[in-house]
Length: 153
Image 1 (cartoon, rainbow, N blue to C red):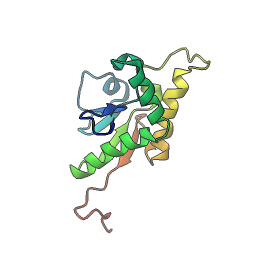
Image 2 (tube, helix red, strand yellow):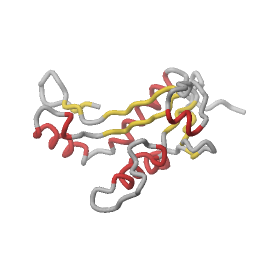
Image 3 (cartoon, rainbow, N blue to C red):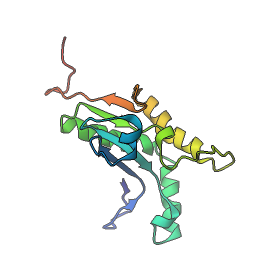
Image 4 (tube, rainbow, N blue to C red):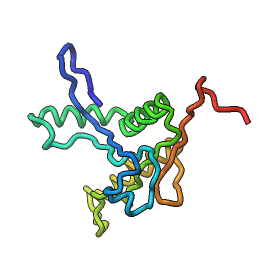
């Protein structure tokens, strides 16, 4: 996700979402959950990191901008829109417990990574209507009907 900066040609990149398709047998999530569908699983919702910019000022600007947005929701909405346009019936989202960056010791303090991961993944999923499945992943069904309305039963 980029933020336009005046008439400058390049936006300030402020967030990223990444996913993979569940039939990747080499992926640790597939191993842990047994997920074996050809459907997207969102595995990363990431804001700025200081190491990802060529100037500290850009990092500070990105953090300031993101502080005014519901950027996690925006990134997930982009994936859901992509799935709808491509007639993909469901999107899954990784819960924080399965995130490979989660601290197994569940440390606390002002920079509690596990709490941040929980807010970013689990809370975002719940607020957006994803439902926790038996395999441990959150799932959102996507309307793939041709006219954008849910099919009548």
